[in-house]
Image (cartoon, rainbow, N blue to C red; front, top):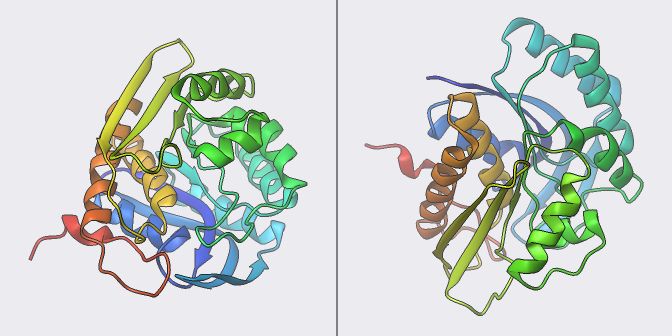
Length: 267
């Protein structure tokens, strides 16, 4: 077991996304997962019925006690519903003075449509957290919210990435799953701040069992970085892991079902 990942995100009682998906992903890729829980959600494959935010001071304490004892090779953030949550994370990292790689998944809306980010938290996300990101992993709707642009093509994704770089991340993974949903392919673009672009093309699986794909992708990338991979290699492995997790999804629930995170576990 190599690569320590501290996951700072919300809980999904249905187990398909959030902390639960993150823990499974990091573990099944051979890493060691730790958590600082930012919110509790009551949800299933149909949607989110309730959210209970964790107090900011308690979020700080979870992060503080983990990092000062166990340490971390990479951080991953997910659902950070309130401005106070984002400020708490940045404040405690400043207090500890630790420069740890970070994957920021700018979670805004659940698969079922529920909002997971308060509108007033968007500014804190842009000004405090994203500047710390080693990799920012927005899907198309998230990138549109962060940039104010309409994204309908690969060229639009490039323009959005350029605008996102103004916020300070080292790399931006623009996920193309929401573009051209009628097509048989999905194309993601990894933009680096030095101008390098990596293109990842894959088959589009026609299925409703995609709950937690964003969380899973970001955690898989964080695990790769924690294990010493370059960002592009971490993204490549994450893409393959998520594809197989969707392809072999168990089919649970009547809505957007969970993935098969355990496909790497044999026997």
